[in-house]
Length: 246
Image (cartoon, rainbow, N blue to C red; front, side, top):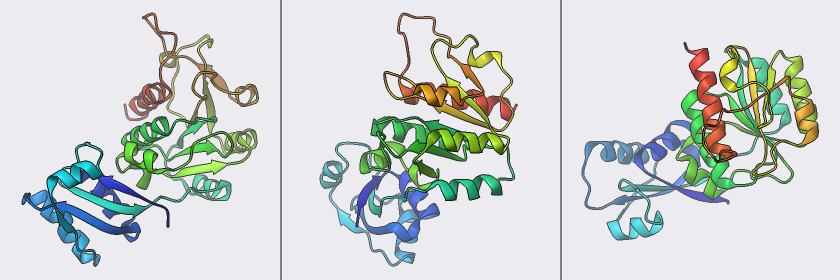
């Protein structure tokens, strides 16, 4: 069984809320008695999981020095969803569609950070390529801080075909490119939308770019030529969120 460890009150609560059946073990700080931690312990006990009371130093080692807030759980890795599930979920939407597409993004820290932002803005999912790209891994789950449990990740084999299908469903495809003529802030973005981000360094592939309805760039005032993929995706997603909820 492929498992990972989640730590911190928010991440553990997300696992309890969205995939309690995947939790198989838990550890808690033997010295902490606060109400929020006790609530999580009670929820775990109700699932038949008795958290192991553990010294704080051991928890710190288990969490690689990160802020564990007194609790760690071991969970099965979230499942990657396929193209058929994506189609079912898109067709079942009753809200304005909002997806992030990552074209061969390989850094697990970028995917984890994108998941966290996608959860924050209420995106309906992240679409990733099967080849030359990262999927759900323990590192992704740790960086996502619980968002891997709440945001669907769809792994598809043919991105061009998937983008064509999304367009047939009335979803606009917005690509990101440094040489685009218009900036993110020049457009009205309150329509069904999928934002496409390219891989670290080289950007979108040529065929992916051809399937975009339009391209945008993030205006840059400094000397740095481009932003990290997850930072750029965060800027993009929050502008869409702002416009759709204005």
